[in-house]
Every structure is written in structure tokens, then in C-alpha cells.
Amino acid sequence: MSIAAVRDYFKQFNMEDKILEFPVSSATVELAAQAAGVIPDRIAKSLSFKVDDKAILIITAGDAKVDNSKFKQFFHTKAKMLSADEVTDLVGHAVGGVCPFALKDGVEVYLDRSMQRFDTVFPAAGSANSAIELTCQQLEQFSCHCKGWGDFCKGWQEEV
Image 1 (cartoon, helix red, strand yellow):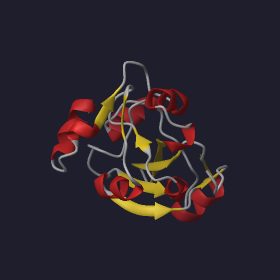
Image 2 (tube, one colour):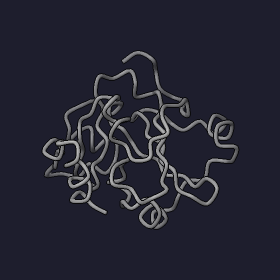
Image 3 (cartoon, one colour):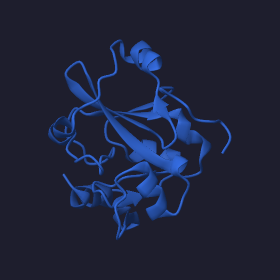
């Protein structure tokens, strides 16, 4: 998959023209924040895990870290991140451009409440130099196979 697949995916919502393509890398939270001109916390990072032999994505605020005990309590298994090759094979996007859009079948998406303190967030859009600005409501609406909001993370503040 690629930014082209994500752009095609967003056509059904008439949002394909909202995808931002940067002349620089946005493959990390810090680089994405610089490219988009926002604080790193507003970058919606996609973390890829394996649960019951399938891939899941947890989308979190840029300053949040997955809390292993919360993960285990919710998913009933230890948090095991996918390797870069597994991400590409199972999720459909390469590391640096992983996003909750235009995913392979069966990939479930979970949104972390750490993002809800912001009016808008910036998830990647299928490449290592892209993003799209969305409200949290839009992020939930547009994410493939979205299972809703949860509390999976630690390390972030309630205040902006």
C-alpha cells in the first residue's frame, strides 16, 4: 500500500485533497511535527502489535507510550510489537507511513484517549512524508476496522 492507496481510500469521503505531502521526511513523531508545524504531541502515531496471530494498530498521541499492564488487561496478552517486515506484510504500510487507512483485511484499529485533548491530530497517510489533519471524530470515522477508543497509554499529560 502507499500514499496512492490512502488517497484512493479517502475519495469515498471526498477528503483525498486534504492529504499533506511534505518535501521532507515525516517518518518519526519529531520529523512529522516539524513538517506539519505542530507540537509533537499532536502527531497521531501508529503502533503495530500482534494479538492472537493478527495485526492490530493502536493510534496514540505523539507523547504517549503504550502501558504494558493496560495492554495486557485489555487484550489478555503481552504487548508484542511487529517487526518492520511484519508491519509491511500484515498491515500493508511500511514503517514511517503506517496509518489506520487503506489497511489489509483483518487489521483492527484502536484509538487511544491521549489524542482526545486536541482539536485535531495528524496521522500519517501511507508514506514517510505525508499526513492528514483530522478531528478525533474524523479519525474514528475514517479509520479502517476501528474498534473505538480506549485507555492504552501512559506518559502524557491531560493539559496541553
